[in-house]
Image (cartoon, rainbow, N blue to C red; front, side):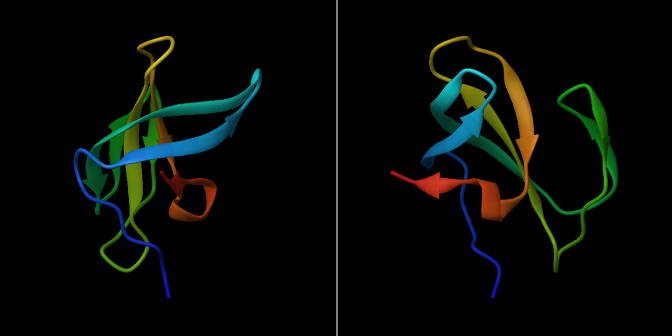
Length: 69
């Protein structure tokens, strides 16, 4: 079963500089442009747009890459 997150959830993920923490901005459930790249997503395989607390940068991650805090 795919992990689900909601807007406003605090999450942690691995980044180039180690661990990053931030907030889920939205769930992506269709193919779109987000976080500077083309995102392939569906209702069965969503991805999440997140914002880093430290840098303020936005990125898109698959649910398995995120850990809810």
